[in-house]
Structure formats: structure tokens, C-alpha cells
Image (cartoon, rainbow, N blue to C red; front, top):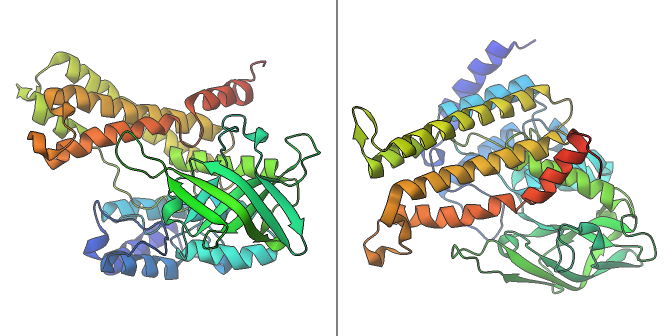
Length: 395
């Protein structure tokens, strides 16, 4: 029997020998997209980790994982961070739909789809929200009509993040329009490389367009690609949302959280703009703000580690809403702190005005991360879940 000490030693030795320099520190992280070319070291890192089963380390070996337990998973993450290794593979394949198929899929569906997710052989988008069905998701109207061995999909989804670079999309559709709205929904897997699927990017204030609108016009889905049973999509879809929120919160052990180096450079950045006096941040209000943010960041990390240690399944239940929300709010607080410290330097949109590339990137990141309390379930939705499901408050 391999002890945890032996596992750590073996993991450390393997990572030191197999993690390329070009896969360390900030840089490209694969989503699995067939349309995005990977840098050579990133490709090598992904292949090596996939062969090791460490892109999805807690999944069963037969589906591309390494069957690590919680303690082994924690050690792997620590050792990845120690060498500065980037996550070998991320995205909705390993973090959202993969764990959902593992829980609700048939043996045939698991055998087909999970190795694809584990190896990054295709990126995934998420087809949930619609123009008339956002927070009230059960009001969705995208239809799936069964014709022989296929479903024919028609409708429109919005906020389908990364859809322009995705190969597949998991979609909540209405399969029984005569049933109550929560009971007539199913979850299907759609190949986006077909004539019946059109993707239109949605421009954001930050200038980037990761969010999209996706149209389905007689798109075809084999009946074998409906997950969890006909009209059981509300149950399956809610579980997937728990995996999504757990990923946002940093507590989903089902996917590839990996070795992202999350150590904050915020103190150094703030000091660069505000300056220091007697070895500490010169401006008292900024110094107090930074201290409070640092304390909250450490508390958040401790909470994440505790949540992972206490997991009895592959994703926590309603804990994910609380940790997801506090994580998003703390990240946004750090962005606001940096903008306050930057002063006039925080009002540049491009380098033509004399700002550095880092300053422009910081401003656009601040704007983009406003979406953190919207994406993956809005702040208001999370507060409702916490009130009802965690605190037990009445409706």
C-alpha cells in the first residue's frame, strides 16, 4: 500500500521530470478546443497529464482518470503549485458535463464521452439561459422533438460562454411541452459542427466577447445523447449547476482545478502606485483595505480546503453557492482596491494614451470580472439558495 508520503515523493519526482518550462507560470491553458492551436509545451503537458490520468485525477481509471482520493488529490494540487505548473486542461468538459455524465450517464455514455472530456478532445459550451429564461430557467422554450432515433432541436440560447471556440454544447431543452414547466425538460449533448447550429459573439464593455448567442435550427441530436432520462433534465441540470458553482468556488474535485498559481501580486502592485513609507503602504486607507482583503483571501482559501476535505461526493451541495459567492466578491474587492490605488492610471483604455500594457490589462480585467457575480448564477440567485437551503428561511 502506497502511503501519502510515498505518493507525494513520487508525484514530486514525476512533475519535476515531466512538466515543461513552457507550462509553468501564467500562460495558455487548454479548453480542449479543436480550433485553438496549443503551444508546443502546453500540448506536451496536456498529453502527459492525460496519459497519467491527472487531467481528471479523481475520475475512475477506465474513463481517463487516476482514481485519486481526496488526500491524494490535495497533495497533487500542492505539488503542482510548488513547481508553478499550470492546469493542464480546464473548461466545461472536465468541470461541468463530465462529472454530470459520470453521475447520471449510462455505461455507454460514460464510455463514449468521458475519455473525450479527459483528453481535451473538444471544448464544451453551456446552453441554459435564454432571452426569456434567465433566473427563471424553467421557463425555457428551446424545443426537442423526437423523430425516429434523433431529437430535432430548435430555439435560442444566450450567454453561451466560449461557444465560438467550442465543439460541443450541453443544452437544456423542452421535451414535453404539455407537462408542468419543471417536469418537461431534458439535457442533451449537441455537436456544434453541424449546419443547424449558429454562434454569434456578444460584445462586452471590456472589449472581449467570450459570451455568445447560439441558435439551433433543426439541429440533430441522437437519442443516445440525452443524459439522465427523458424529462429528468431539471434534476440533472441542477446537479450540473452545483458542479459549475463548485468550480467557480475552487472546491470541485471532479474536474481539473490543477496547479494554477493563485498567489496574489496585489500587495506589490498597490505599493507600486501608492508607494511605501517606513516599510509599509504609505496611504492609511489603502493599507487598511489591503490588510482586510488579504485576511479575506486567506480565509477564503482555508474555507476552500475545508470544503474539499469534508466532501463525501464529487461536489458539495449548497455549500458551493456560499463559497462561490464569497470568492467572487473577494476577487471583485481586490480589483476595486487596485483601481483605487492606480488613481488616474486606471482610466486608460489603450496604450496610445501613455498607459502601460499591464495597466490597460488591469482595467479590462476589472471590467470583465464584474461578470463574476452574474456568471454561474447571479449574486441574487446564490443568496436565495443560501437563505432557503442552508439557513432554512421561509419563502
